[in-house]
Image (cartoon, rainbow, N blue to C red; front, side, top):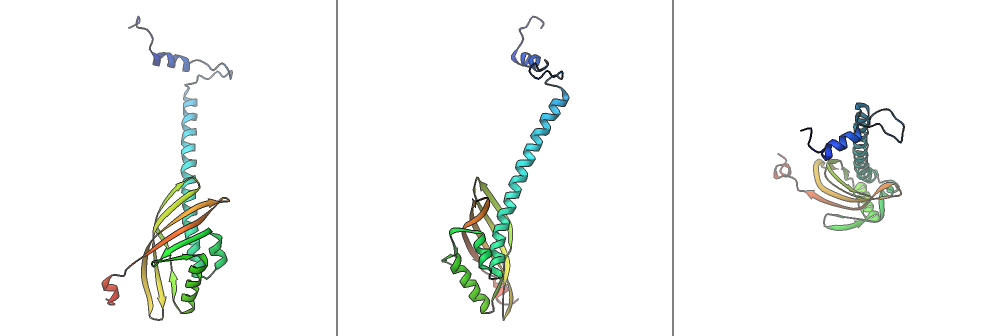
Amino acid sequence: MKDDPPNFLSQADSILNRKTRTSGSSVPTDSPHKKKAGLLVTIMTLLVVNTNAETQEQEIINTVSTVFAAAATDDTAKFDSVIAPGFYMFDGGLRFNGDSIMAVIKAQHAGGRHYEWNVTEPDVHISGDTAWIAYVNKGSITDASGTTQQKWLESAFLQKQAGAWKIVFMHSTRIPPKQAENSGQ
């Protein structure tokens, strides 16, 4: 075996075991300290990237939740703060822009009907400055006859503008109540 020519891996190992010449360091490049430092940098990078993705996902969920909070309190300024120019949505088979959906909700409130909306089971996807979210909106509708639990399947497309997520488009499909709920059982 001594007469075998050195292979690529043994040559690489030999090079890595030498002291670094440019830095004047006396620590070999494969020292346990450097290996640990390299591993630590890799782990920290992954944590930062993962934390940033989780933070952005939460920002998107919060943006959608802000639309609901604004609509529940007839706060048009707050609603407008989280939608993009040209925003529109489909709900109940109709197309609404920001002003028209807020007018419908305000009219419902004036007629004694109130809604509770909550983002649950969010599925967020981010690609650069665009994102989409699909979720189950679990809430209720309250009027003079009482409160009815309600669910909607919803999605939204968002775009990051001036560092903030804005909703460009939303879609809502109401899940019909079960027959048992309709009969009061």
